[in-house]
Image (cartoon, rainbow, N blue to C red; front, side, top):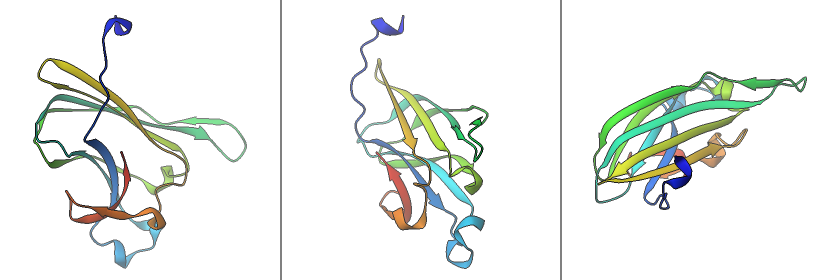
Length: 139
């Protein structure tokens, strides 16, 4: 059972959302954006599962929930970035959650990364060294 599994803290793994390369040519709401998993560690991550969804409320106060997408990567190399999925800017007003689970040797690690509403904006861009591009980082 899950309560019997010891989860060590996740270190050196993060999620970033980056605008497409042609970002300077379009307005923020027209940009294509991509979500990446970053492994800053000196070791590979094995059997990685990323579950993504969005949730929140519409302007009338009705709950909104997007479909849940699951992505599997057998291995994420050390000091590398892996594309998870594209994300539509129309979803930026929601909480965008990425739940990452992976193994290192025989130990399981698990962490939720949640981009709060309206946090994925150009004002929050920072340099992402593994991609050599700007992005919104959640660590």
